[in-house]
Image (cartoon, rainbow, N blue to C red; front, side, top):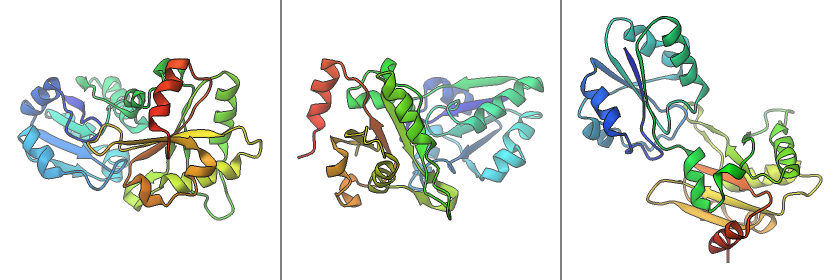
Length: 248
């Protein structure tokens, strides 16, 4: 059996249902290569009450170790956020069902729900996108087309910033804004929201002009994870709420 269990945004939000699957498991695995290196493993092990084996990207995506072990024993696989937000975990779930391996999903909070802390209404978000660092002579701008299409429909855009823990890459909001401004040749983006460590005790939300926020030192926003929201057409209640986070 394979149980995919979410740990929530800060790694401590495992549900009672998730804990029950951990208690009944033969092995407990976890992966953090799509999250941050500052995860407190000792605290997570204290919460779940069992030792945890941390897997690499190769263990999960190439060797499919959680799936292979689940063929002969009960496996609890812990992941940050919600287990079915990442494509990798959806693939594992699909393979388990195809191979007749009993599967359990234990959901938890993710950025897709917690971004409501900005005051924007969740049903008014359009397609999300990622801003990644350019490599050599390649500058991927597909994220900007997503903003354009969402703007036409009056929808907000959630932008993820480049995060590759296994390569020690964590884009800061200032770099993200500079890449956004470089792509924004039509200058359709004026105000943005920078959301840092949403769901953590150190959560920080800042709203303002992209031209002003991009001139700040990266340290102002603190450590990752960060994301950026480009608002679409805001309801008056949204406008009132985001003003509470206005920079300056």
